[in-house]
Image (cartoon, rainbow, N blue to C red; front, side, top):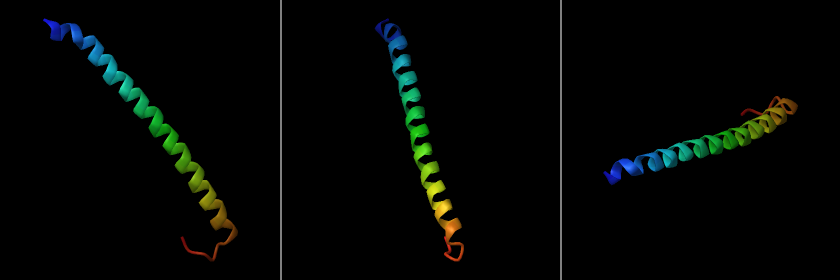
Length: 51
């Protein structure tokens, strides 16, 4: 019976973990996008340099 009482709390922990992971993933994607933009703009100024 105690197990059923703990289910809502466990569900909220899993949900919160999912939300936090999504936020971290979004921040990493922003960093990667910024880095790729820097690389891309640097390559545009030196087109003879291969990637």
